[in-house]
Length: 186
Image (spheres, rainbow, N blue to C red):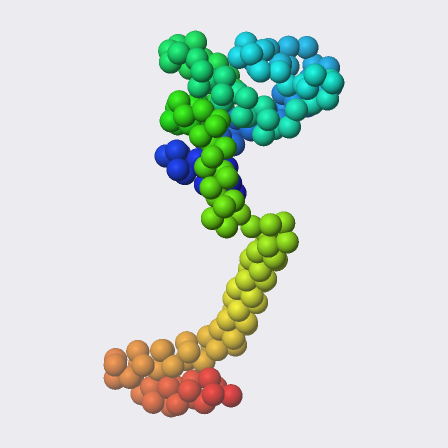
C-alpha cells in the first residue's frame, strides 16, 4: 500500500515495479538455492543480495538498494541496461523513481503511513472478506433472477405472442394474453 502510493506520487503505477519485485524474489531464491550467476545483475549494480552474516536480504532492502544504486549512476545506456535487467520492460516507466532515489521513495512511503493510507493486516483481511461477501451476494441475486426468469419466461412469451396476434388481427389473441397474464401471476 505504501509502495503503491509512492509510485503514484512518482507518476507511475505499482505494476511497473511489480516485475522488478518478482525478479528480485526470483534472484533471492536462486542465490539461496546456489544457482550460479543468480546475483550477477545485482553485482553489476553493486547491490548484494545477502547481508554480512550470509542471510538473505528482504525484497524491500534489495529494491531500495537497487533504486539508490541506479539513482547514483549517470543517466545513459549502462544505467538503462542495468535498470532493464532488474525491472524488465517497465524500467523506462520507473525513470522518475530512479532519478529521485530510495530516500524520496521512503519519504513518500512514510507519508502514506502518516496520513493513514495504510490498512493493517486485520483491516486488509476484513476488506477481502467483505469483497468475497459482495461477490457471493451478487451471485445469489443472479441465481435468484435466473430462477425467477426461468419460471416467468413461458408466461411472458405467451403474452408477447398474444400481443403480436392482437396487432396482426388474429383471433384468440386476447385469450392468449389473458392466459399468459394469469400464468405469470400464478
